[in-house]
Image (cartoon, rainbow over all chains, first blue to last red; front, side):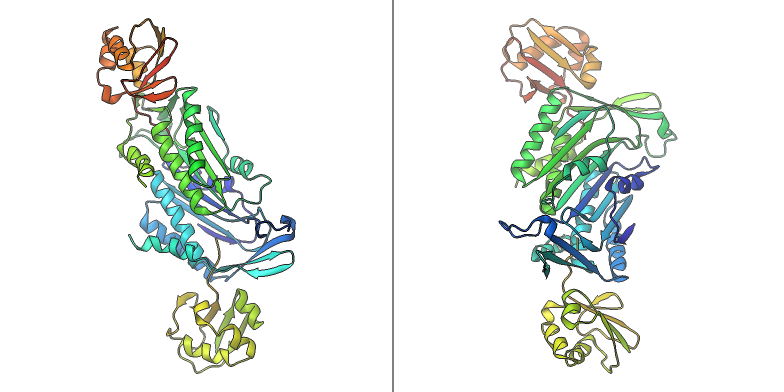
Length: 155
Length: 155
Length: 82
Length: 82
């Protein structure tokens, strides 16, 4: 299941819903991505003077997340999965993204969860605008994210 | 932090406690291990006629879990971590173990979480007794768990 | 008529989140050339193709992808979600 | 005096969860030999060392580990937690 929303979410409730009424799941791996302090090392800008705005491409975002999730199900024996990604204005400490994968065994759950995060970083149309002390700056894509996504196509 | 307990736990509350009051955490990877249906494929034994009893070595369990957690902190830049392992009689669908790792970046959080699960499987003194339709049987250790733990010592 | 969407710094650079273009262009590359000529802001923002990603009807494409009337074309920077 | 603890099928095989042993053994291996002689159940349960794991004072050890009066020795199967 995928959800793209401005609202916050509750990790415990989401994973509980994934598991509800089932006794065939042995493992649930999950990942929570959070807004970190954005001020440069040593800067005096307090967390309360920082914000991150997540812009996305409505329609394409849902399509890409559903594609990514389907790819994970083709590749690993997943019993259930969930991707929630927020958009809008967030503050340091806020939740951005949740990925959870359920499988009979732990390795598939872990690998699928990492795969989903790696692919989501490079395929889902989201962009981050960081505001620190009133200055807004678009976050550059990281080469390490491209490399992390590429590792799933070379084995 | 480690906890060995008979009582159940709440994933959402535990991860919230790990994060509380912090804005330097970018990633929380977590793993939830559950009791699965134990009846052989095709068997008619209902989930309600199954149970798993986890026995452990009080004292040594806490010591080994604390050792494993300390090893993860030496190896990855973790900001917080948590291992909760239950003992006693559990039913299909029940929670057995929770591991959560917080880090500025996702790769360290994922790797440390997998490392903790792999080491815990082979180093923490727990033993599972499965009861299916009144028959009790001690679960054999899996060679794949030994292999999974060994991969962390060969790189 | 092609509907063109802009996101992130492409949107703020051009100063529009979308515009509808009358064009004879049959590829995304040809459309981009036309877009660059629309204003100095368009020209500057769309100058370096290496910094841009393209989608037609919500699928990633290259410069030589075909376009036709009614398509939705999007121009945006590399993604930074997650 | 050595306090010996048994877990899982070692416990149910021997029928005890712990016992206190008067021994002159100075290694875990020698202690195991003495334990095997205590009863047929001990002998059978502790027969195959490949199926057993050993700890002294809550640390894993091999058969040649030294033991001394007051030590806590534990005998159990490979672990199956997690």
